[in-house]
Amino acid sequence: MSLVQPTKLKLLFVHQGFPGQYVHILQALAEEGHELVGLGLRPPSDVVPANLKYIQYSLQRGNAPDIHPWALDLESKVLRGEACARAAAELKASGFDPDLICGHPGWGETLCLNDVWPDVPLLTYQEFFYQSHGFDSNFDPELQAKPDWQNTARLHLKTANTLLNLERSRWCVTPTHFQRSSFPRRWHPQISVIHDGINTEQLQPAQHSGALQLQDGSELEPATPLITFVNRHLEPYRGCHTMIRAIPALQDLVPNAHLVLVGSTTGTSYGRRCPKGEWNDHFLAEIKGKYDPSKVHFTGSLPYATYIELLQRSSVHVYLTYPFVLSWSLLEAMSCGCAVVGSNTAPVRELIEADHNGLLVDFFDPQALARSIASLVEDRDRAAALGRAARQTVLDRYELNHCLQQHLALIKLVASGGLGA
Image (cartoon, rainbow, N blue to C red):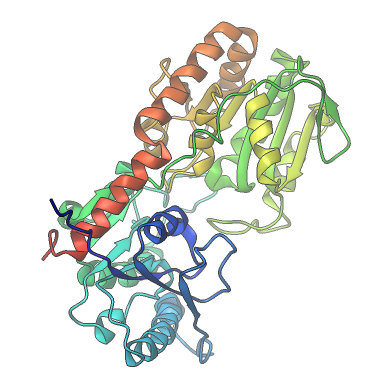
């Protein structure tokens, strides 16, 4: 009896910060023996498979000095799309014709690849579709001015790259149902929802003996109530203002607790920069003299192993966000068994069911946030039950290998013409 060998595919992966979200997918495909080529703007990280051929493209020019500001975003993406396509054309001339192109379209790289390979299916990783109402824009009345027609027009034009890529994609994938909901409804049937996956073996509950050493020299004993809050950058999009404003009330309710805020205190990942200085300093100035700063610790970015230990030691983890792309940090905290207090916003409600695997509070209510955190610091049995349920949610729906197998199946289905043909 002869065994049919699986088809070996030629696959091109495109990501500005290669490998980006494709790191585990590439490793699995390399183990299966597929021919892999990567295209990106930056040098690849050291986690890419040894048998992957990587090509780094470079931009030929920058933005025109007098371009209309509403067209600046699209021009930037066209510049990357052109440069990436030039590298792809050279790759094609060398004899490489992929069975499938997998790409993150967010920076424009995939715009022209179907002009190089007109018959090759394109599977794009779609993160978010910007809307002028109902999502992250016009959500925070304190910090976001009510949009006028010029702002909505600018935001509408910002979707041009996304729409062009949707039109050319054979199929799309996005991590959460909330993120899919941001796209125009006509595209929903062509967008699969598959999360990137969480390594639940690496991110699991653990007991640590001895004091926690923080960057500022503090040592926190295991019995110290520890509240954690994580942003890439401490910014309003991820609720830094609500968290900071909750500190005085939180310290009144649980005066022995320490708050550890992880993330850069300068700049932003999303949204506008602070008009004067940094957002972190701006909101801390509001509560100056009303809290004990010795129990509030800003760590900046942490080594990943240190970050995991912090989550494993956390008494309560806080995650707040505008209606926007969900952060991995929420799932990582849940996988570590943290008792989570999250904002009652759509991306969080997809994961957190109130009083089952976490608590939900109004994004704009610092007092309610403080009360919810304090209730879990004081009721450790309830916190532990919520943490167990949170981890089970990740095990059931977001475990890495489970998600990875779905991604691999989708890639092979699109490459074979089984979807979107």
